[in-house]
Image 1 (cartoon, helix red, strand yellow):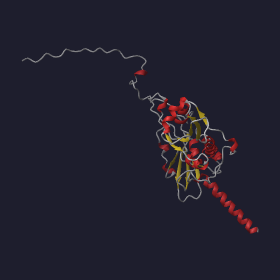
Image 2 (cartoon, rainbow, N blue to C red):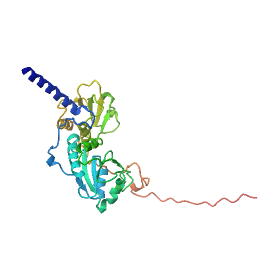
Image 3 (tube, rainbow, N blue to C red):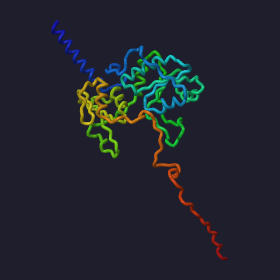
Length: 314
């Protein structure tokens, strides 16, 4: 019995070490065994509801003018069968990706002020209620003053069962935010050779996998515009590592909070409003040739028109 007990302890120790590595090692986002430290309470009774958007301008701001991954429940009433499962999925996504990565809203298309906004998306689904995902970069022609000219597009719609939380979770994870770029090796990082005045530090995840986990993707979003994130795939790598420049993180790889604290102490402050599109005009270009910037008008010019020459003699 004593030998059996010792053998069980050894097996449990190896399993725990393997799970810790898988939390940051990388792999398929749709996996169900990923071990990450939750940054929110997992009590289902404390799941916050989705936030209602009641105007077209609020929809443009929170769904089209942001860099968050956004889930929007389109419905024909104040409540729908998708509200509860979407709120629970959003709650769990924040536990993996971080509190800022995903935002979830509801859009009551029966409201008169939202009918035109909803109409453009109805052709993407056979019926509503349905859940739409918006992700990617928010962009707009800087010379177009209208807010509705935002260029961010709807990625896809989920029309599966509102009772199948696992299916919606797998669908939503495909469109989570990620600013992680592949890199052959740390020596190939040419960011420090940039001519830009502001060079951000680089964070490297070295792993045997080709795809980073939601935790690392979420960190890349949390520290967006504070650091550049890279994944280095090494088939011979036995244990994943994280470096910030030449400094190695030696803490618990399964603890998102510890990794975030390590990065927070060594990266510049986040610029204000970084998760929302900042409308601006390139100062180097002008529709009026720079005339709107003149303090005084140039002196008037006098033009003289000469009469046409006489016809040649016959």
